Image (cartoon, rainbow, N blue to C red; front, side):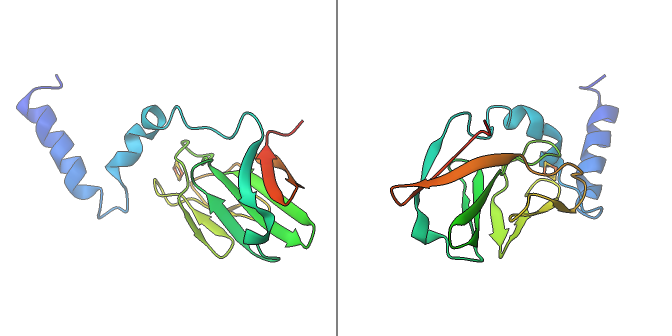
Length: 140
Ligand code: FES
């Protein structure tokens, strides 16, 4: 029974052991907590194109999108909703995205998984520059 002292001890023991095992208990509830977050379902303006330099990536946490500028006029964009359990990714170092929930890592330039537990790549988005502004949205 969930409210019994035995059940509480089990939960507390799991909470005590989780950090040592490299696990975060907050991760267990990520599906419900992040169920309302998703990749853009329509094109969104992300800001000036010149904010992303050639060879660099920029994370737009308000829209759950990462944009990489591959060449002067070629951009790549991906949803930053983690493909493991849908946590919004909030860390970008160089071109490496790291999920805060279980540590999956992705390459921002191509969406590929760099580190499990995620196994599926990030969802690719359509991206273009309109009047100097980056616009990203679902692929057609
Ligand atoms: S949700 Fe588990 S690693 Fe991102």
